[in-house]
Image (cartoon, rainbow, N blue to C red; front, side, top):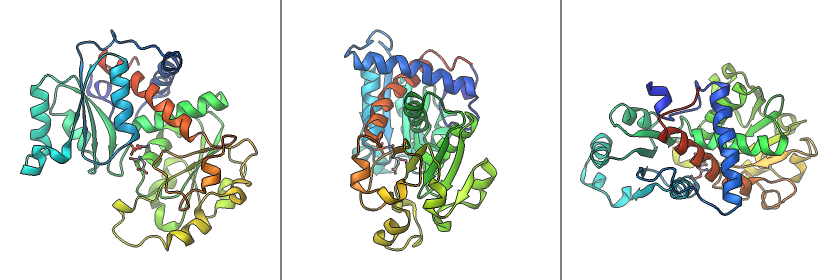
Length: 310
Ligand code: ASP
Ligand code: CP
């Protein structure tokens, strides 16, 4: 099994059949989860370790739930109380976990490329749960599953990804996935938050919400990643909301059946108005969380079997 297939380090480079394979398998796990059943024999005897060097609510808990629903032994390593604080390096930490015969290592780190580095050093299959500003592959897969279930396809849809594109690994993974699957992708935000090279990825850039959302099927909002900002790239939160926050008036430019998405965590009143976030007719934000468990079950299932099908 080659390196690319044994781990899930990013969406970049995944071919359409591999993406569809994950989504198709995840569909079956949506049904299993909704029926209240589990498949605890599938990963019995496998050990999954969650190694999160950055905060998380959704990703860490859904990997834990996904592993448990498939019967794996799941450990959540608390980095905050670990020997990392005594100066142990990332690689030594990983080598230690590796020596405990870990099969699946789920890693979140603030340095882009950290999961890829670990994948070269450990026997476990490594899953990137978000690395710096680089990628968050399972987020893009769960977003794609949410869209595909609601709209019946990905191809030909117009998706507007709005806000802090510069610091967002969610945006990067989504750009790769959605362009690969034939969606028309737009990025919308202030010039300070859109990297210059993004246009080369086959997306259209907008600095105005009305133009960027015009006719969109999907409006995906992103949080301002202040923890990654080294300079004051945005004015006050209030002013940011006025120009780039999603409210009813701005959403009116999108298609009447446009869906509103957000990977979470949300900063209400900054990038999204509460009334929109909570509107069951438009927002699929909670559904994204549900899809996250199913997608992570599909990823664990696939990698535990030794790699992707294609
Ligand atoms: N939770 C996502 C991430 O970790 C998005 C965010 O934090 O805004 O990348
Ligand atoms: N969407 C996402 O990755 O959420 P968490 O940071 O809470 O895991």
